[in-house]
Length: 243
Length: 310
Image 1: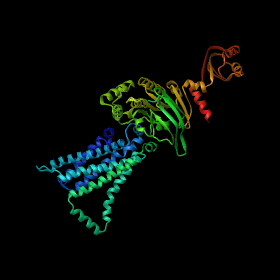
Image 2: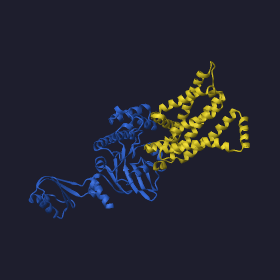
Image 3: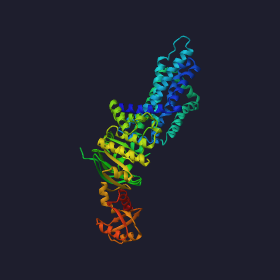
Image 4: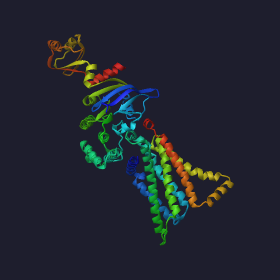
């Protein structure tokens, strides 16, 4: 099955790279330029040293993945390629995991490339002769969390795309979901009583980065697995053809 | 190994209140082109989806290459190729990449894959344009490429769902010839759905006619013509006046008389001797140059069947 997943990923990447405009090669260069050159120049050493970057790099792949994953099933359905794919020897899981894998690969690899370019930019612009590196815990945390963030968006995206009539509809649904994920915690915490907010802040301040990373990894892993399981149960060839 | 590539027994599929396939009982022997004829909405595409295990039947069962469509659909899809309602090609990828993708899906080794892709593209006259994006191609070229994809892994059975639909007559004829040659050369069984009757007549050794999900008849085109078609005489000549036609219509063995330019088509009641009819025409003033006997075309048989079932 691993080989079959690889074949689907190969095709998905070929298609992504063949896109013209903001989602294709030009789009990738713009994202890497923004995240790897422009923002590090603006932020200085904080780009490498601030613990806030952990949260930042978890969100980045979510947005990147959303731009491609909506197309996974809805796009194939729209372009009438899905039925032929379903009539091939590929298993349900190979198709689903291949689609998820391709989106994760897209989001994570651009994120990591931006991370690397950003490190070089920060060193060149703000290093002052010293080698600046991400602290080990933070570096590993960024790599792990960005991967899990990409996985979360890819699983949710495939789930939405399985049911959506068009890629555009899937994209809109996913964008709304991300906005909710972004704004609910922000505004939700503001709405909490002052006493609760103080206690929450105290708890966070008491934790070290490692503890925070571990909690985030656990939550994201559970969400990833849960969404994948739901997507697997929703993957029905007959339904996909008749929709 | 069973002699039948496809066998269905009481195969039925309902969509809400509509019965798309109605107790279908069909046997398709291996190694031939089987034509599945029917008007739009007759249940042809649903039958293919059932045979590929993409849909589950409401009732009955089907076996494809000896495998049950409900419990062994994966085995069936491993051994079949398909050109479905749409060509299913990735428009942004090149022709070569489209075939490369499906070659990889079927686990063809790299060398075999490359050789096979080249062989098929050369045969279909697409080799020079293999690097072009498929989206820029004409419909005829896309259909050719989709046939190459269906045959790529040398499956023993391929499903072609109206492969020439929407093509101009020249492109359709070229495509027909291509897949007939390839199918014969590779010895594959072809399950071809079409509503183009001349296509079925030219290609198929066996045809089945379906209407509103029900199989009306199965047989070779000759058998169907003999069973359903009216014996006919075609007379070429001049002077086919109203007098000639009236004298023919008065004969009890004549069902219908029709004139088309310098041709007279006479439908007969059973296998009767035509010499008295020719004599009658000559005596009524017609000049007869040639007399041909035959049955109605498959198209006429098909139309008769459709009329009977209304």
